[in-house]
Image (cartoon, rainbow, N blue to C red; front, side):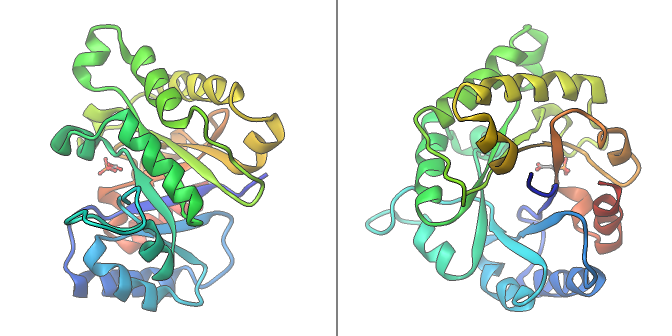
Amino acid sequence: MSKPIVIANWKMNLSVTQSGKLAQAMRDLLADEINSEVVICPSFTSLSDVAKVLSGSLIRLGSQDVFWEERGAYTGEESPKILEEIGCKYAIIGHSERRQYLGETDEISHLKVKASLGYNLNPILCVGETYAERNQGQADNVIFRQVVRALSGIDITPNQQLVIAYEPVWVIGSGRPIEPKEAQHAINLIYQAVLDFWPSVIIKNNVRIIYGGSVDSGNAGEFVSLDHLAGFLVGGASLKEEEFLKIIKLI
Ligand code: PGA
C-alpha cells in the first residue's frame, strides 16, 4: 500500500523568491523521516528554483497544471516532458479554479491525465461539485461524471501513481471544510467508480483518494480516519511551514 500523501498547492500566491524561501523552510522542518509523501506545487515560474531547493530531500515537486502535447504551437502551455525534465513528479489536473476561470472540461482532464502518465508525472486529478450543483441534488452525478470521463480508458501500471482529490468547490478557501461524513460519502463514490477501472491490487497500491478544501491543522484530524482517505490537498494552510507540518503529522 502506498504512503498517505499531503500536497501543498501554493496557487498564484508567492513570488519566486518567496517560493524558494518557503520550500527551504519546509525542507529544514521535514528533514526527518516522515510517514507520508509530501509534494509541493509552486507556480510554473518558481518550479526551477524550488526544484533546486528540494533536490536530494524527501519532498517531491509537482506542477499546478500540464498540457497534453509534448511540444508545438501551444502558446502559454507547459509540456509534460519539460516538467519531467525539471524534476516534477506530480501534476495537478482539473483543479476547480481552472474549470471555473479557464473553461477546462472533463475531456481536457482526460487528455492531461493520459499525457502525464506518459511522462512519469503522476496525476493529481481534482473533482468536486459546485454549491449550485449540490443544491440541485447533482453532487453525486457530477463527481461520478468527472471521475469516469477523466479516467475511462486510462491504464495504471505498477510503477505509476494516481491521486484523486475530492474538493467540494464552495468550501475551497472558505476557512470551513465540509463535514467529514459528507466527505466520506464522496470518497466512497469515487472508490466505487475506480473499482470498475483497475484490478483491486492496482487500486490498493497505486491509487490514492484524498480530500481538499479548507484543510488546516485544526480540522485535518477529523478526516484522517475516513475509509479510503489517503491524504490531503492543501491550499491556504500550505503557505505557512509550521501549519503545513502540523497537518502532515496528523496523518
Ligand atoms: P484551500 O485550497 O485549502 O485554500 O481551500 C485547496 C485547493 O484549492 O486545492
